Image (cartoon, rainbow, N blue to C red; front, side, top):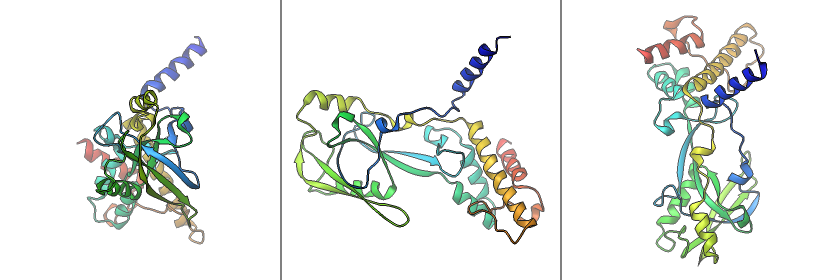
Length: 265
């Protein structure tokens, strides 16, 4: 056998499975506001001219990296299915775990950063708080559609040191300006934009389920160590249990499988 050929075939199969973390030049695709003030222009989305913003749900507590929830694409997601099963119980620990595993939304907008126009359109990802602020600005009659390429508005994004997290604020620059005086550049920006839903790796159902099992197993192990050595507290964020009084000493992983057995019926 040709070992190189075998390795190449395995690599090909992994690529097709969608479970490899894709290598992305994030500095070219994403814009992350630095400390201090930055001036940007949110531009109309080529993917949805009526709405420049997009929303994606991520699993933050499962796996080494944040993972896209499959429900973003209309598919069944093992973590969300598991969360639904946990919420069917009356166990407080189950509901606590469900809260930790519930996917969180992240919002995105295509932006041109003033002074960095040579970087073209990049994706700005932000929280729900910023999202609501941006929507409120669009509702303001004195502002309106700030993404308009001809009669729109730039905005200042300011990041300030916070404790424990930095604080981000957005304010409209109160002067109507065109996106650019270069029509060819404007046309390019409006047609060529990265798509947030395509930038992140879309992992398949079985891969996400495997990450979930490992997360639960790690928490179950930490809980067992706490029981045998009560003088040493278990690590933060891992001292949960899926056990209920009627389930005796069945492990968290066993109960996970039981829940999925119910889903498979």
